[in-house]
Image (cartoon, rainbow, N blue to C red; front, side):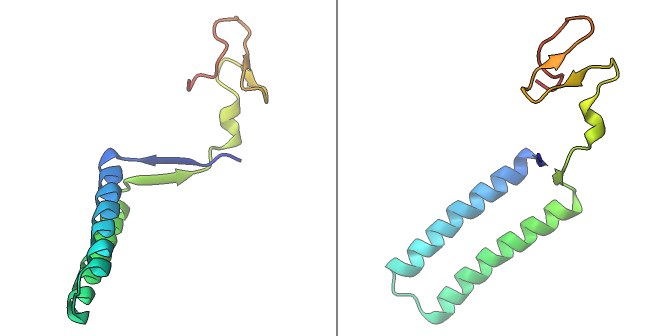
Length: 100
């Protein structure tokens, strides 16, 4: 079973920035002598980043996760797909599925 994930490029950037900022925050928490209030603020800002990012992605449908239907295995021209990844054609035009 294949699962397809489609996401916009800015979602990938948001995730990357969140991971980098999280690594910097963890390094600062462990390497400096911060008060409990400062640690709480750093963690709150990090959690807020992920919550806002998730909310924006949800509202703009920026990430799509779906399982392709079985009806996509047959194309309009009557091609059938075999398990090897090759396609048997009636007209011998192409050897790969149309999405390659």
